[in-house]
Length: 163
Image 1 (tube, rainbow, N blue to C red):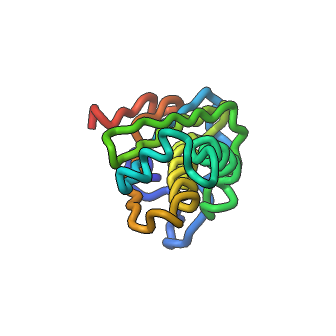
Image 2: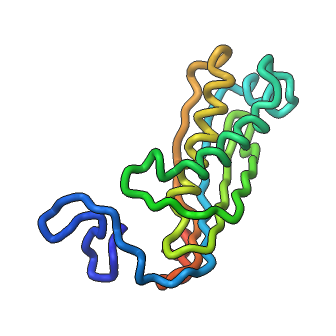
């Protein structure tokens, strides 16, 4: 993260890593939406879509993994704040016969945003899909994990489309 001056806020004046002090920031409603994609063989995606994977409901398990990951982001990202999540929504879209898209929206009322929670949840959801399907398709490719939108806080709304 950087502030309006363009400097990175996770480093102090001596260049040492630090957790950003958000104690003076207002508690506001905040949300963030991230997405990521996983490419795979058409037969693998067809089995996921039909629910015929030998491991069961791949997308259902990956949805739970995403929610768990959002709740534990501060344990995975060293300088991330622990924040109370108000909600995490996970959506799936079949973009074509070989590409699955995961979109996660995380919400909170806190002094800092939920971008890392949304991004972490998206990543773990896709990794879970890979884990559940790797026995039949080791060539899957995870990528294009990115923030789409964030709302709340001093900086207000940011949309990928407006950048």
